[in-house]
Length: 260
Image (tube, rainbow, N blue to C red; front, side, top):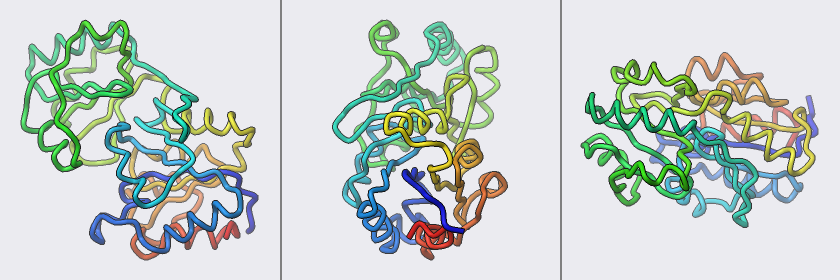
């Protein structure tokens, strides 16, 4: 079942990083990434995290680029931006009004910075767990020069508040934090932009994921691999279900398809 794979894209949490085994990258994954690089395969992260919460992965491996914010921003290692997709400004103006009225926790994410609309414990705890600096309060005056690429709504019970925004759609890796992206966005859109830059065809792409927000990229790619510890929706969307991340799931799938 050998496949000619030219690029691999990896989700972070639950895929590259084994949170069940101490929140580390398994040794077999590090060795697999090094072996892929020696073969000339392009290696990208594909995550829902904002850029400020992705930097830590560099201590494990230096990727060729980053598909972050669920595909809304694609940046090469040298800082070249290949793809950027922003929210409709009118949706963001309306969002700020709604948050101030209904008083639910929300995080506004630009390309380089994140902001809270109203100070709250959910936002504070999220940043403390990620080990990154706490955000500042959002100023709507930034919107014209600093497009919003994604915003987070904390708590499923708060999703109905944004139902009136016409150009957005929610996605999530699971849990209570909902990533809100523009309609027409998604990890597969960012991956396609990266592949186009290198002249890589869809069938030459292999993706690895474990969360609900990985479904579309798993279906879209030439080979979609769900980790054995993945969500039911991720596993249903995949071409192949590997063993869990902590047991060598990435290496196992690469061997299965003859990539390594």
